[in-house]
Length: 139
Image 1 (cartoon, one colour):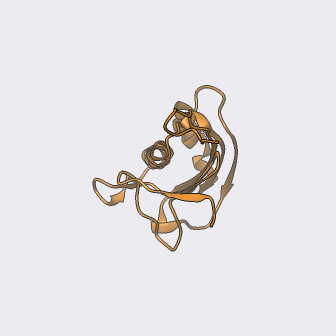
Image 2 (cartoon, helix red, strand yellow):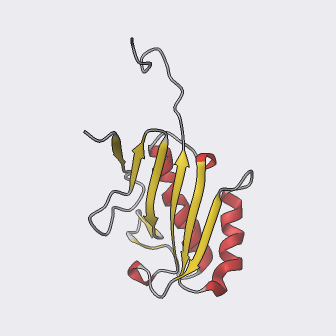
């Protein structure tokens, strides 16, 4: 039996295909590509890169927190931009979410993203929950 668990959050959009929004495997958390869907409106969060970047990072945070971690546990992010001309504006929003020790990352331009959005991001985090007497293994 695999030792990984799916991660979901009612605050983050459901997947647009046959995949998990996130998986927790040991002390690793893998967040699938998140697009800027706002679950309150069920629509793209705005038409500009700033509002879409903000929503993508919120969606990542919702999933990371559902796994019991924080944004500070993220070690790698991949960013997919529809237009690299948005790089500077995206960075300004991104920097507000990773103030101290930002994760490693890559950023690439792609020809198209789901729902014709402007940005998508995936993330990898490392997190070891604090063991309590109830969760500690017994020998």
